[in-house]
Length: 423
RNA sequence: GGAGGCGUCGCCUAGUCCGGUCUAUGGCGCCCGCCUGCUAAGCGGGUUGAGGGCACAAACCCUCUCGCGGGUUCAAAUCCCGCCGCCUCCGCCA
Image (cartoon, rainbow, N blue to C red):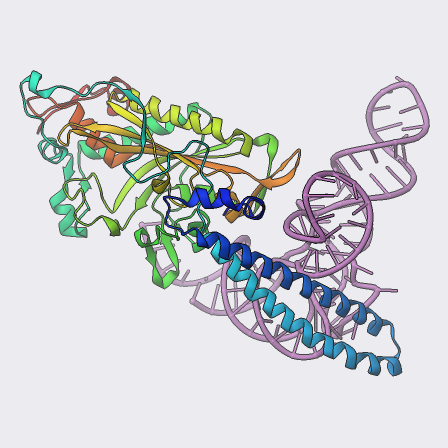
């Protein structure tokens, strides 16, 4: 959630940062009114409670005759305290609820607008010219079949649409990619983590996934647990309710976990293949750092993502997303979008967000800084979303005969194999 | 799933049976000061966290905080109910 002080002192800034997001501007005015009401109620309660405690002390010291007289007064007071407590509770809760609907403050210079209003920061590599090479590229579904790497038909037989099996070399490809990604991160000082993919609502809510994104989340009703859509959730919640040592920051973690997404809002979109699926595995970076360092760390996360994609020799674009695409938590977000030859366009393959103190406030993650105890900043970034990376690898490195070249960096992880060949 | 035990301010711990100066005891650690060739020891003081009074800092004050949430009561660490976590044993299981 956002800082209440910013709301009080600079409501215009809060209003501005909701533009493009789904919250209306009147929400801010309602919030200010609710905040004042809540504070008044708290003051009333505290005043009464102090009086009650004081009388209670007198009762404790009094002898039996004095006690009877004091008790009638303190009984009345107890009634008042009870009422004030209830009033305070109601106002406090409704304020918190409203506050949680407000998205994070935008980072400076973030473009305001919808999903088409992103800025292209950089283009790396060159898409292949298949016309010049004299053949028509196959899409990943076809290649996956030829190589015996992806079985979509049986995926849907067993689990339904948007499910798949990775088979044979496809399964090996996942393990190779994951190992390469985990090693790269570990070399850069990240602690490797395999986190739980089922979490309580606190973790889900704290990371901002139960707001506008709730319809995309799987929930296990009978156990009140949620399937995470990204290991960002368990990694963020890892330090919830903790006070971290400021000297130990940044804390960098890299998690490997399955990701589950209902894709409720995307019926009919990307229905072919494994580009958009209900389940995939992902290697995700997550960092806890000081608010002052967050922006610089965000650039580093983007650099690590770029290194990984570079290593796999895939052409891509770096985009800075506009406000509407930031979700609740992010103050700024960069996507790396890789070239998909059969779609003739760049598609998202990684995404890195600077959530500043937004998630840390909700999850109560603080550190002892020189200026005092305060929330840390959290950041996340994809290193390797396995299914999408497989799509990109197959399509970009394919040859006319249906074989696929293995990028040099990945070869050691595939037993030295330099190419994948049709069965 | 069954039975039992436990959860107190960084760590350990007293208090819980029998509700009231608990406004939470003591030790360790840590911080400040004194003493001191240096270090250690010793002595004195401080040390849960959050929110607010309050626009910044200090001081002071108030509320909340004894795993979490309810309840009883004028009053709850203490009594009652529910939940969570940890430990031991049993059952089941990869």
